[in-house]
Image (cartoon, rainbow, N blue to C red; front, side, top):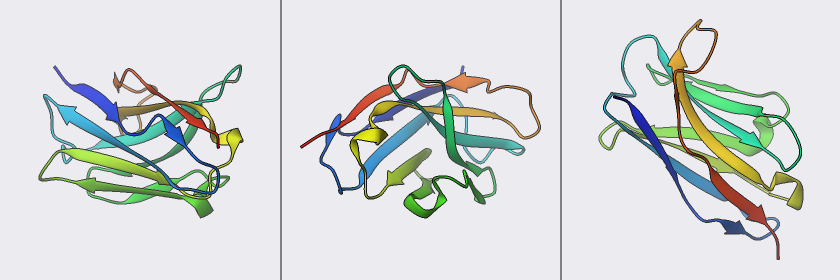
Length: 120
């Protein structure tokens, strides 16, 4: 059974960089035809896809966040990470990591989500 777990600081100051890590267990992030994403949900709003990394290591980013987002992976630890720079209070959200098959209709695996608040 594949499980995902987000980790990282719950409070980030404005203008700093938000850093989160997703640890995947029960499956490999290099499994063919899978991709791994970061998704967030601001308070009172819907889910927003931020970007992801494919099984072979290629990145895909949301155009609206591309200039501030970096997603990387550590295959030795079976983890992938998110960095969001120059954060503002508008980046306050529950952040989720998720995994699914390339071309699939929905994500097969989700983390439980982690609250990140941007505040001084």
